[in-house]
Amino acid sequence: MSPDPKRLLTTAEAARLLGVHRRTLARYAKDGKVFPTVILPSGYYRWDIDDLRRQLRDIRREQSEGEG
Image 1 (cartoon, rainbow, N blue to C red):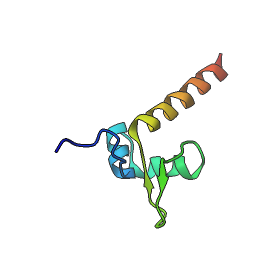
Image 2 (tube, one colour):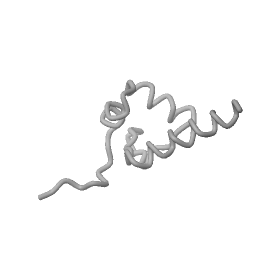
Image 3 (cartoon, rainbow, N blue to C red):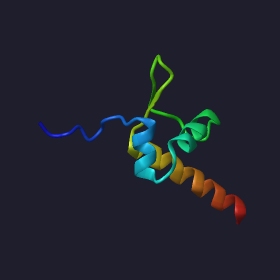
Image 4 (cartoon, rainbow, N blue to C red):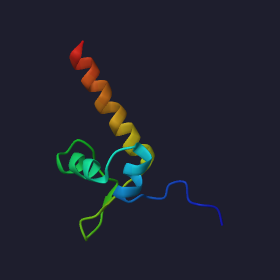
């Protein structure tokens, strides 16, 4: 069986792929800078890595446009 390309990742897994600490990613979500794909009843986040990367690109783009 091949892995599901849309598998949702834990915060730690997503953070590792992005090269940030899991607490940083959780703080971004808590502060409303990024939005997880799913929030489980337990309060844990699950991430679609492609969507998360898009959100971070949009944040960087907005920041760079604000500087110019």
